[in-house]
Every structure is written in structure tokens, then in C-alpha cells.
Length: 530
Picture (cartoon, rainbow, N blue to C red):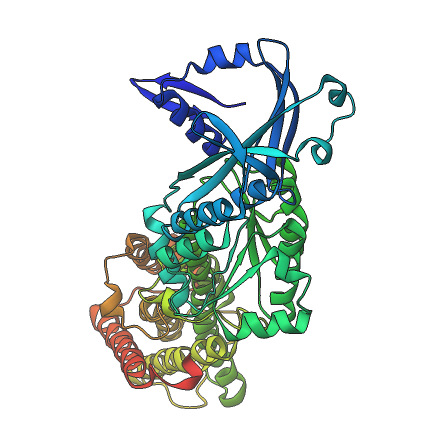
């Protein structure tokens, strides 16, 4: 049911946009819509079907006679018509007149206009009881055509361009006339070649799956005048070629294709409940650009998870290697269990969470889709986390540890405590504290290094993610709390550090940061970093 509603001094159409456009056209022509509805009550309606490509209704004239009105795809309406209204007369529809009308239809279609054909005929009352679409939609009198422009949303063309740069192929599958479909496809950038392939619904029965695969693989393709079963076949063809397929739909008949696709996207505004239940995603604004935005956000989330994991891996190595040194070289216990817990459950928490809200990196939509089997933890994450950042962090804190010990007069093999569970020697406390604080300080270098695999931290900006800055303040503040407050010193076996100790650690941090920046600059185009 379509009805205009006046809200805040402008008219708004409630219902199907095409029906609304026709009502608007009638009203602009001066027709009394409500009067016509009352004067020509509907007795039977045959809804639109994609196979018939038309709909019709049986209405009663004021004089009691019955008439069927048909509208739909203009060429199909022409084929069902034997007569035409010319002026005030009804005359035979000659092949020449059909050719003239068809030529005009094609001219409109080339401009990207959607065309509807209209026809009618009077029917007998005895036809009404057993009437079906097949029995009454025949021997029609052709009335004419309307052409309407359904402009693509302004943002769609840019969204299509972004998809192409991102390695995402967009294919139009529509029930519209093939010339109209091709014109719209050119306008929004789906088609750019001079000789694209236009496959219509009638072509499907004549093409094998192998032929379809060859066509969609070798040329730009537009599918027009297709039925829902054809849409399902298109999805199967693209999946058989090894693609990850997302498909949009809104009708009940789209449900099989939505279900079969890897990602079914139902329209939220005009979509049916069946379509929404069959889809993995519902597009609440029915806007194609929102799909592209979702892809960008998905890529950013995937990257942020990798950054988070890399950051976590980077501090695990400097926690583990001191214990390896403790076992192999019999050095004093380098870090306590409570200090490790303070790092894992305290100082690293907020900076790690900050990586999870990083904005998409520049150029993220210029990269091709990642392979199907590529997971979050790959060789890049392992290499950067454990080897590059992890070993650099470990080298820094071990160096600071030995520096403190040697400065305090320690010699290899010297025992600082009576056993490994007692921590009272000031030199030992300072040595464990320097490793604890060293890991915390190295996390600052890690957080900026992990914001991008290939792009410099200077390019990303040091102040673009405020949560990272709060995270750094939090971890430094917590570390100071644990090493300077006597109550926590006893619990965590720490001791206060001097400004020279902090200076040494921040110098190590700067070295790690600059080495990582150098690596990004030197190996940003290396194959293993892609």
C-alpha cells in the first residue's frame, strides 16, 4: 500500500519508491488519486513476480464493467499486446510500431532510466471467478511507457572505486533491463571496459557452468533480467572459482542466494524478514557504501588484534630470558613472581587495550584481501613479537641488570641472598627492580612500534590515539607506586631507583624505538612483511 504523507511542509512517500513515483506523476498531471481509487475499486490483484516481470489488477468501472490493468517490463508488455491506443483510437499494434517503441525504450535505457510499460483490456465477468495471471494477462491494449531516473547515491561511485583498489570485485545482478543495467553500471564505475559481458536471464539456460566461469573470469560482467534462481547460480559460480562471496538481497526469493553466500547482506529498510533471517549481516541504511565502511573497519579490527598480540609477545621474551640466564649462569634471581604479575595484570593492560581502538591505517583499503587460510598469528607477528622486539627488550633489561650488579660490586658466582625466596639485599632489590621497571619502560617503545607493521610512528602521529598516552602515564605511575611506596616495596620486593637509572632505561627505550623505525624504513617493501 502506497500513500503520500505530508510532514513538515514537504511530501514523503510511504511504501515502494517506484509506486510512489507513479503516484507523484499522476498527481502532478492533475489526477484525483483518491477519487480514482473509489471510482475503480480493485477486485483482484496479481502481485509482481520476477519471472513474469509484471503485476496486474482487476478493477471495476463505474458502469460495472471489469478491466485488467497491467504494468511491468515494457518489452514483455509489448509482447502481450495486440493493440495500442493512438490518440482517441485503439488500433492494431503493427511490427513497425513495436520496433519504434522498442527503439525509444532502448534510448531511455541508455540514459540509465528505468522504464515501465502499461496496458489494459476489458474482461468478462465470468472470467473473474477463475482468473489467473496467465489467463487474463493476454491480448492487451498497449497504453504507453514511463521512464524514471533512480539516481545512485552520490557515495556509491567512490565506494566502488575503493573496492577496486582493495581487490574486491563488485558485480551487478539486477532484474532491470540490460541496457539500463549497463548504463548504471558504467555511471557508478562497476564497468569501465569498452566491451563488457551482459548476461541476461534467458542466457542462463544456454550456458554451462564452465562457460559461465570463463565469462566471469575473463571480462567485466553485468547480470540483467535475472531471476532469483539465477542469482543463486551466480553465487555458486563465483564460489566455485575460489572467491569469498558476499551477496545483497531484500526479497523472499533472495533467501537461497543469501544463505549460500559466504556473507549474506540483507537490506534493513526494505528487506523482508525472510531475507534478514537468511543473512549474516543486515544493512540498516540500505547503503552500499556502508558495506565498504564495514570492510574497512573489519580490516582495522583484524590488524589491531595482530598489534595487540605482537605487543603481548614482545614483553614475554624479557620476562623469560632473565630466568634462562638464572638457570644457565647462576645469577641472582632477576625478577620475582609478584613483579611479573604486576606487569601482566597491571602495567601492560591499558596500553594493550589502546591498540585495540587504533584507527584504520592510511592505505588499508589499497591492500588486496588476505588469503583464506591466513590467521591472526602468522610469521610476521611471531617474528616481530619474539625476535625483533622481544630480543631487543630482553637485551636492554639484561644489560641494565648486569650494569646495576657490577656497579654494586657483584662478581659472577657471588650469592646476594641466603636463599632464592628471601630478598633483603639492597643490591639484589635494585637489580630486580631495574628489570621490572625496564620491562615497563620498554613497553613504551613497544606500544609505538606495534601501532603499524610498516608505517613510521611519526607518520601515525604520537598524539592521534589519546588512550595510548593515558596508558603510558598509567603504567609509569603504577611502576612508581610499586617501587617508591614502602608498603608495596615489601610486597613486590622493589626499591626506589635514582634518576640515572631511569635515564639509562629511557636511553635503551629510545634505541629500541629508533631501531624499529629503521627496520620499517629498510624493509617496508620486503616480501615477508606484506
